[in-house]
Length: 87
Image (cartoon, rainbow, N blue to C red; front, side, top):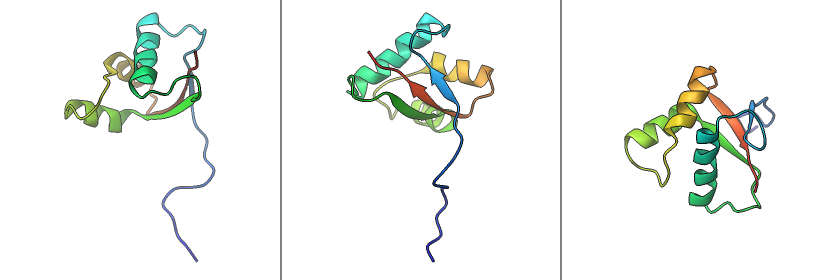
């Protein structure tokens, strides 16, 4: 029997950044993240973990910064989510 740490099925919060009431500054950060990661129009969702991203950004070990997005998610008590975006 194989034991794994991550469940195959889980419930996720989705942050819909496409045509919603999400503040424009945060949508701009998400758009920049898609551009920096070269996601283009082929990727519609990305998993985002607030604690992981905060740590990475504090260590300056990233190619994009999302301080407004992190603050917004923390404000809404979201620790992890799927971000939906396409252009």
